[in-house]
Image 1 (cartoon, one colour):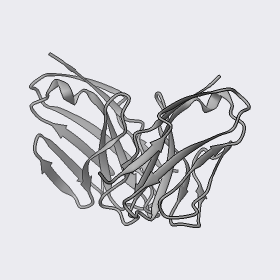
Image 2 (cartoon, chains in turn yellow, green; image 1 turned 60 degrees about the vertical axis):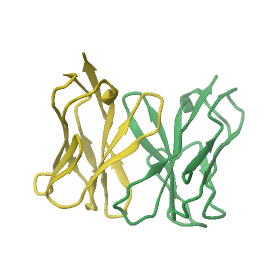
Image 3 (cartoon, rainbow over the protein chains, first blue to last red; image 1 turned 135 degrees about the horizontal axis):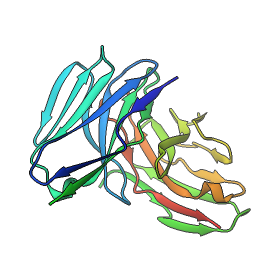
Image 4 (tube, one colour; image 1 turned 135 degrees about the vertical axis):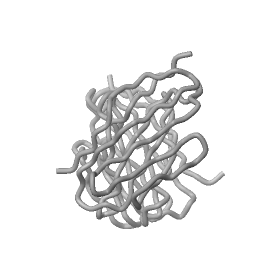
Amino acid sequence: GQNIDQPTEMTATEGAIVQINCTYQTSGFNGLFWYQQHAGEAPTFLSYNVLDGLEEKGRFSSFLSRSKGYSYLLLKELQMKDSASYLCAVMDSNYQLIWGAGTKLIIKP
Amino acid sequence: TAGITQAPTSQILAAGRSMTLRCTQDMRHNAMYWYRQDLGLGLRLIHYSNTAGTTGKGEVPDGYSVSRANTDDFPLTLASAVPSQTSVYFCASSDGTGGYGYTFGSGTRLTVV
């Protein structure tokens, strides 16, 4: 079967760095996505990795290792507005997204 | 602004009644999707359409039907609502080639009482 695993909840301090991990097992692989979802809102696109390595975009970076079925999202210089759920999703061989349940990130002052 | 429009934003529906959730996109995306999102369960695919005129079942299709008469519209119908269909429903679309992921509508919060 297809499976995406990520921690349910994480807590971090404003100004710090946090890493959210995601492991996956899917039928085929056409890329891994990270989305951010604030409470009561729709998910919004953060990053896309299809090749191994690190993709950096401002305060956010995403890493992929296809051989390990592993990705992480790294958030630097945390701000209160980063409090949200972060969803890991893998695009399978049919170009459909398989979703993890999301990681709720709580930022404390 | 290009994107996806969902209506209504929220609705309280009596059990046994029918309802259609509307979804319209103006990006000319081929693929469209309906998800429900429940606390602790993440996004679950209800139905999808890879192109106009075709539809497919997702992970949780029972109790729901869809149609895709044209590229822009992808309505979701609940024929006879039950309380377990209380959820937040998101419509999404993609160009079907990966890379850009999905674009989501703002969601419909449905309560079945």
